[in-house]
Image (cartoon, rainbow, N blue to C red):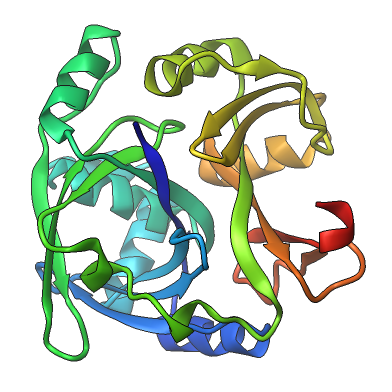
Length: 283
């Protein structure tokens, strides 16, 4: 069975973004530099063990090149020779700052890849990856890359507690406790739903109301609700989001114990990511 592992928020400047999220009341834990040295991250870890990752390239020049290439229609040519992992992440960076991707964790990577391929999904062969934490600890995992709007798969080769620390790092001054759900913007709920059904089992239609959405389809991911949502018209914010980023994650909902009313964090403060805090009164 899969579990929600983490969401990825692309940022241009990691230190600036980490400081910004701390000002919003989140505890931000430095993550370290990924294998190959081309990217680094910081983590916002929740009590339920899920987290979201602030992800940036270590070279701002490369960030600029990717975004320019996308603007002039040359991104595919620029990243065509990269690994499946780098292609996916570079394409996310090229779209600008914001909520970009997410992963589900598995304990049986090989079996899952074969099962998903048997269901007609495109899944690349698993590739090794990792990072070095600031304290020098080496962390290793494997990734199997799917095609957005599906999440990619991750399996730890070192203990997950090395990759996702526990304890005080999961306490946040704004009261954020756990991930309740994620909205995924798609152009066609029925089409995207077939892929998600192969991954997670049958969905439930029109259970979650999303502003600017027509049809929606909910999937349970070990207690986290993944909602596929398609735009209800040309002025929908979902359509605007897809014009910038393509199909993929649109909004995170976090349960927090400290606020009296539900409300979104402003995207200017969250570096383009839509995050909604849901209070105990509405949970």
